[in-house]
Amino acid sequence: MAGHSQFKNIMYRKGAQDAKRAKLFTKLIRELTVAARGGLPDPQMNARLRAGMAAARAANMPNDTIERAVKRGATAGDGESFEEVRYEGYGAGGVAVIVEALTDNRNRTAAEIRAAFARCGGALSEINSVAFQFQRVGSVRYEAAAADPEAMLEAAIEIGAEDCQSDAAGHQITCEPDAFNDLRDALEARFGAPHSASLTWRPLATVAIGEDEASALFKLLETLDDNDDVQQVSANFDVPDAVLQALGV
Image (cartoon, rainbow, N blue to C red; front, side):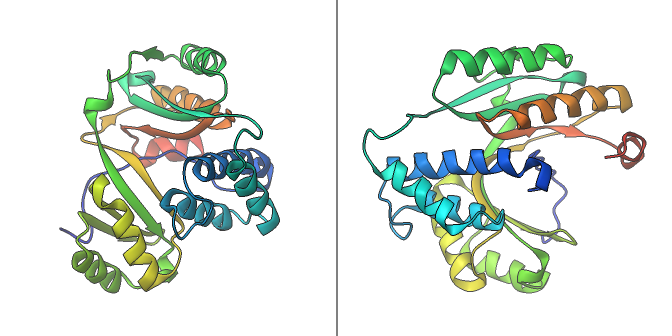
C-alpha cells in the first residue's frame, strides 16, 4: 500500500454551497430516512445511519432536521417509500458513468436519467454494461487537519486498509466492501467522525478527454447531481489541468 497511489477515484459531487444546500439536504434526508427504515434508528447499531448522520453534520445540517428524518424513517409505513436503483451509461468521449439513486418512482427517475444522458451527448445503457470498468470499494475521507499524512497512513496500515491517499485536500482511505464498516469504525475511534464514508465505485482505468468532451460531460454530471433522486455519480474521466482551467472548473 502506498501513501500516494496513482489511481483516480472520481466521484463527482458539488460541495454544500449555499445555492445548492436545499438540494443537498434533500438527498441527505432521503438517505437518513432509508437508513433508519432499513435498520435500527440507533446510529450505534446501524452503520449506514451513522455514516449518513456524519455526512449530514459535515454539510451543516441542523440536528433537529437530522432527528426528524431518522424519526420518519423509523416509523413503519410513514411517508414515502424509497428504493435503491442503479443506472449505467456512457457520457461524451466514451466516459463510463454509474448513477446511484433513491427513488419513490422508478419510471420517473429512469426517464429523467435517460433524458439527461441524451441531452448531453451520452446514452443510458443496460445494467452491468459499464460496471466491469470499476471496482466497488469502501471509501472513508477525512479533512487534511484530522491528522498528518504519516499518522493517517500508519493507522490505515494497522487497520488493514487497501489504500491511503493524502494531499492538501484531505485523506482518502479505501478498503474492500466487506471490511468497510470495521474500517470506518476503527478510524472514527481514532480520528473522530469522517467527512464522508460510503461504498463507491473506483475506476480501474480512466479515459482522457479534451475540452469539447469535458464540457458536455460536466454538463451531464451537473444535471445528474441536480436531480433529487440521484445520490452519487461515479465516472472514469481524466481531464488535463489545462482543460479544466480553460473551462473554469
